[in-house]
Figure (tube, rainbow, N blue to C red):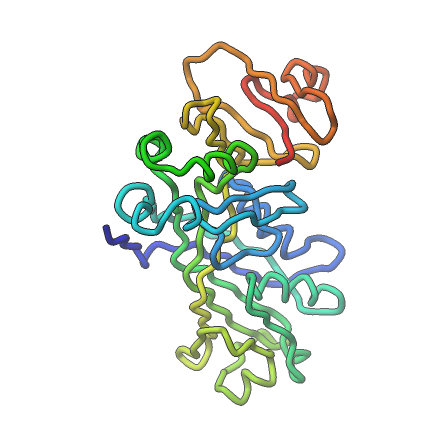
Length: 297
């Protein structure tokens, strides 16, 4: 099965003047991802899509196994993996490149494995505008996933899934487009010589210059994910999912619309159980909903 992506649909994040005191660029990017119902990767990754096994906690994420370890590529393509292209409303934020703000800025521009650093002439740049194109959602078909788990998955993978979570849904960005503006607000024209003076680009990056104004980086990255649970106790039904975090833990919620039973979960690290009614004294905005649980993996 071939997956087609609607390249005309894209997410536009325009980053215009930034005040170090008021707002951090990474904070804004993370807020946008969280608002869509996803947990943010601290460092967006190239190969951490659906099927990746994860452990640890949201701030100390551990990659346990790549997608192909328990979900072979041919199974993903023929049965499991689905793509939903999406359009997200335009958002604008003002970012000025100055001082310590550059560290945060370059973390964001790098978007993961390959690095981007400041060149000798970067101080001439006042504003960076970032457009993220080809933003889409990749996810596993839960019905086909249960069938595969029950009929075809190895016992070794089931052992691991009893102990670790896996990415069941993720947001991926296909292209990053950058434009640079000087202190007068004029777009800086680019060629290879000028670009090398503005930025230090990793040689592994696939990039090009378009219209003498835009730097286009074509190295896809995953920027957000939802964590699934697939265990023997649930008979291979992925009905619990974490799309946010609370108190430094993954916050799992039941997708089951009809079950009235509340499960109890054991946190091996702390040695006690988390039950939803233990948190009823929290403020309304922080109240833990029914059929939910907080865990470290």
